[in-house]
Image (cartoon, rainbow over all chains, first blue to last red; front, side, top):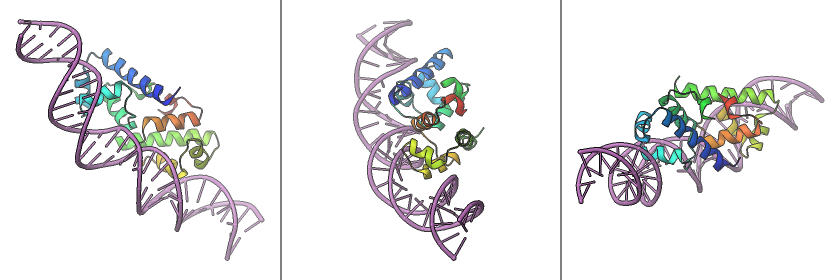
Amino acid sequence: MTEHEFLAGLGARIKELRIKKNISQKDLAMECNFEKASMSRIESGKTNITILTLYKIMSALNADVKDFF
Amino acid sequence: MTEHEFLAGLGARIKELRIKKNISQKDLAMECNFEKASMSRIESGKTNITILTLYKIMSALNADVKDFF
DNA sequence: CCGGTAGTTGTCATGTAAGGCAACCGCAAT
DNA sequence: ATTGCGGTTGCCTTACATGACAACTACCGG
């Protein structure tokens, strides 16, 4: 698995969990205290997020980090 | 769980897996293509690593990312 | 047609991770 | 006492994530 594939897969997983909770990128981003633009880039695998950013998203989704992989 | 606790816990988990494989920070760092100094800081929770750095460490440890949480 | 909603993309400033080098601390073992 | 190893810390540069704001597309509602 390439690094790019890894990031894309992670973004897809985040999107999947977000859709399951029926909230918009904007709403999820607001709960994480950043912009919907950032969430868009994260879900599309364009940014190599830090582990704390992943932690914030995980918390906002009431999910366990394990659920992201 | 605070962000600091999250980072510290992640570092401890990395250390645990590294010890289990019986390799030094230096050797693990070399496999990840960075310095032992960086590995020391990661294991002690001093740096907020990116997900690709975690991915590199995971690969070097022949572990699944799930094993880190 | 026009408003709002969801998502994408460009650009910017600031902070900080990545990567590297060197010096240092404990602690073996000789 | 000194050589070596594992680990820690300080400092530096460069790259990039974060966070923000705006502009844009596309779709759907009235």
